[in-house]
Image (tube, rainbow, N blue to C red; front, side):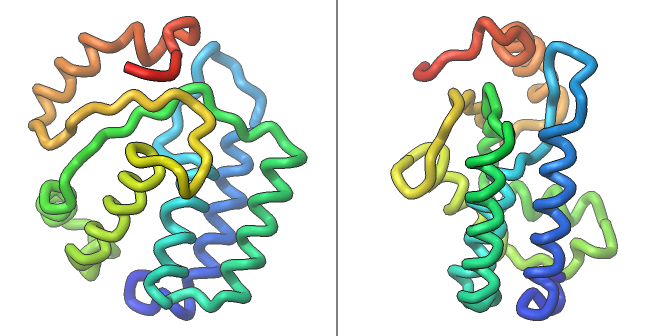
Length: 168
């Protein structure tokens, strides 16, 4: 997909939408379900980025958007809390290089800048897309040890449903 987003964007995002839908709707066996991303971030960030960057034709964008809108109207894909690990694109790029995954070697910093901009637009500035859950923001340019400390300090805020609320 990264090598030829115009060709593979619709295919990948259709599959992502399906797998995210499965994640949202599978029976829950614990009181909290943690997901790295959601069907909402797939649509508002990754589909939007493909379209805005000119790598997804309008017809594909409209089809994915209409599927997403139907899903949101007809199925429970709600989230109770969004934990935004706010990281600069430069830090993401450094971490990506350190992971050394073959499929990520072609991801340019410009792509990470665009994704970051969309997350900021959606979760921080608001207005373009609905934010239907409280957003807990963590500055995440820290090393793993510091991030673990932040998690431990906020464990109850993250894992206890009664602690989720809008605002600081």
